[in-house]
Image (tube, rainbow, N blue to C red; front, side, top):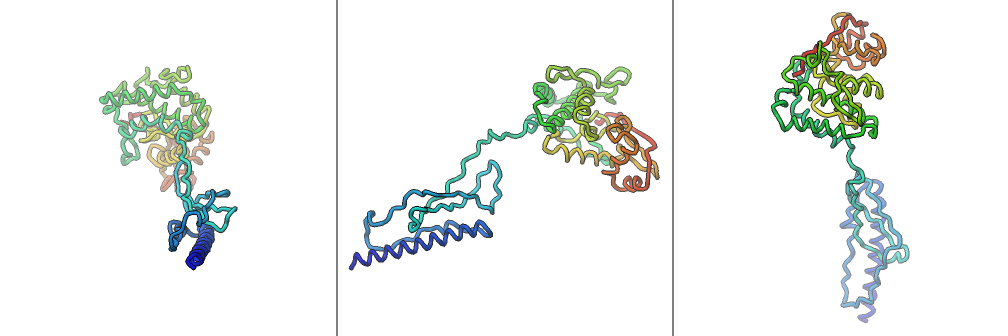
Length: 349
């Protein structure tokens, strides 16, 4: 009698467990469609209350022969980030016996396999310097660089020198297009700051060359074994290999009339967005374009490099129109024409 009761108890326990396993499978599938399921409660094994039973009387689950580990659609999975997984393992050879096992954690991603872009770490020292020495825009929208304070800091001056040396040691031809543009623009700006700081105090960068010619034609760096000047970087490399009007909003010649020196290094992944923002800031500042009735006074940059802005005054106006706001936009819409060019060579200190 006792043995019969025992067999009946075990049979009911197995039947209940089977129903539980089938119900859990449905919940798992449902959770993959529209809602989440708490596995800690839905997959809890049932406790069997019965007289003392030997282990040989209870079926032993066998290793799973068919399993699938499916990431939950309710979780945004990003590369390199470990996330929870739902366990939908079933045993095809013995469907009457449920298998309760913890879901295996996904293998850890070796972060060295997908390192950060070269530019992120390469330009970090330059980014630190810009963060420390470039001011917020003033009421005229102009940022200023504190050359005097940089010159007095031997530590940061050495950081700048070493940063430029680190760029000279790189091969920019191995970079992607955006990485190369960021590389050359950062190099141009860093060398310009270096030259001005070494010769500070000075009222204008043009004073750093005979007859106000500036330092632009002097060989100041060596890249891939070739000596290069600032002109080589801007005109022989950036404008020649990567022609775009937006190059002019990236390089800064340490002058008030130039587009702002930003307080952060150029980076490949944000280059296109940020240089368009720089264009909008410059165009809508008094240094970029000013409307007076139907007449426009614009930066001499649009005269010196007219070929990069459509090759004509009409092309320049069309470029400015894309970013103009307020009175400037109204004047252009009303047919205003370029009547004058202007540029301020004063140092941006």
